[in-house]
Image (cartoon, rainbow, N blue to C red):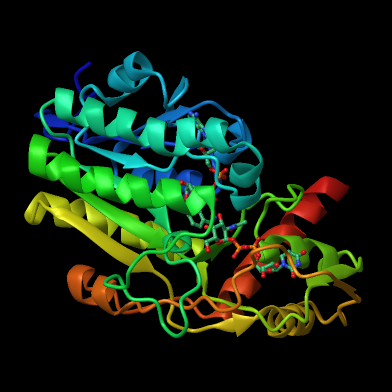
Length: 329
Ligand code: NAD
Ligand code: UD2
């Protein structure tokens, strides 16, 4: 399938760049699709809509409903693409612990299916989502040269994705950037799912005057990174591969850690509602501290700015109130 044409104003043929986004109907993938469209690219989405939603997608996206574990579907979706952003996964630690084999099939099997299609099509560059879960319990700031020690099936599959990406370059010449996302938040993260991020759960509940539950004493910390910053890293990563092909691993984080109790207070301030807090048991295997170093990504990709938690929360809450006002219509 050749890239679609657009005719420049002086009538010469200009070929649009096509990018494949697996998981493009999801929280992060749909924001990436929006950014690629805004840059004038053609976006092809491969998604099975298991957690992704049609309403997340700009109608200009070309949508292929399919399973990332299906080699023929992935090959069809990747033909003619200048690059592949691979975000499709079961993005839940809890679900990976509950359905070990099923989530492994998607999170590692699906990822290798993507790499293998990239190989078969002559070396399509791949930018893929890994996770801070590969670090496990790191005391202090997590840097990319730390020894990975995943504590969940989810983290182990993300680490496997990184190791197969390295093989992909060595054996097959497939260039890649793996991004270790820390805790991503922003509009379209589905608060209704028990697997959703704590910020989307707290923002919806506090905004609605409903109680929130602090797991444990709320002292556990996270590095919360706004979805727009994640998209900026993904786009810059693909550009970097065009300039300097290789196999890279980079954190996507802010370098700032926030406790869950501080988070609840910050959302209370932003919503001008005092959070109603219930204490709950600590989550089994919960990570006590998670904060990353953004230094290597900054140096490699030249990305210096990260959205502050206050600014990110303000944007998220504005989008939620916008949704509520639409719902009232
Ligand atoms: P999401 O659930 O919103 O997006 C995942 C998308 O993949 C969905 O659209 C889903 O329908 C699709 N999908 C799932 N299984 C599929 C399959 N077999 N075939 C085709 N499509 C399939 O989650 P998200 O938060 O946007 O996560 C995107 C990526 O980022 C995932 O790889 C996730 O592991 C990773 N990640 C997310 C976070 C976070 O904080 N949200 C943190 C670390 C890593
Ligand atoms: C996130 C990702 C996970 C994986 C991991 C890597 C999500 C939803 N999960 O898991 O996919 O990448 O990072 O480190 O993005 N909490 C409460 N009350 C609630 C909900 C959560 O106290 O109602 C606590 C929870 O116990 C944890 C913290 O908030 O200590 C963050 O929880 P999370 O589910 O948002 O994300 P996390 O870090 O467990």
